[in-house]
Length: 270
Image 1: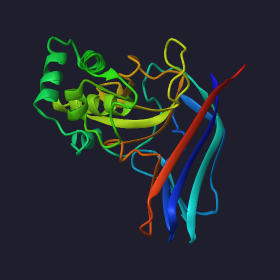
Image 2 (image 1 turned 90 degrees about the vertical axis):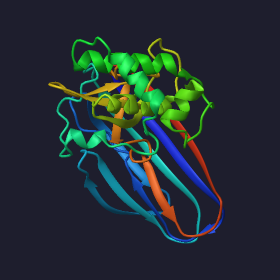
Image 3 (image 1 turned 120 degrees about the vertical axis):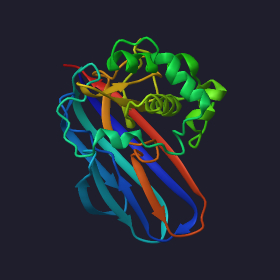
Image 4 (image 1 turned 180 degrees about the horizontal axis):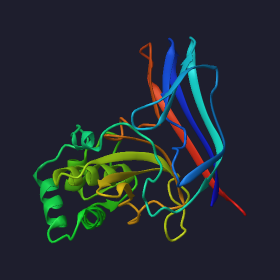
């Protein structure tokens, strides 16, 4: 499948700000499941800084915007050919040891309910792959997909207690449940062309990856009850949503920040 992406993130400020610095993880991952045909990232009025590939194998690029900063527009456009690898992150090069992803964060803190969910889900599982699939199903059943039900800082424990949330909450809950049974897990940001039944879906998407021996990292998307396939474009990963955020930055000033995001994905006829 060949997918085109048009993604614009705009930050507006109530009053002009000082210098803004952005760290962008907006570049498709290198692995057997996708091939970049064309990809452009730009920041209006920005100056491109250094770029590097971090220990997780993700490309990070720095940008700075000179003052006065009244608005920052980050534009991503490109085309990627994707392949179905059944969720397996095959051919991805990274140096961070999988055991590092057993570490908890605020968003993935494991309370008693999440620990119970994990233990009950894997009871009777035949192997680690079976355990991972059971955990993903358990999270999908415990948290109903409900846009607007949570906010950016909702934790996995809070989403589980509420019983509803969005893809970020599903990913955090799966990560926490997996770690509770000693399976390394991490958060993944990217894009999704459509839901499994072909209906429209939020194009900016998130899911989780679980380290399954002897296969390696495998993606699981509880929000859509599947493993990532050719409809997904993978960008980057981290311990949670904050660490894997496609855009992170700092500004100087006291102005109120507003953010608007528009993402469109289209399939190219082959």
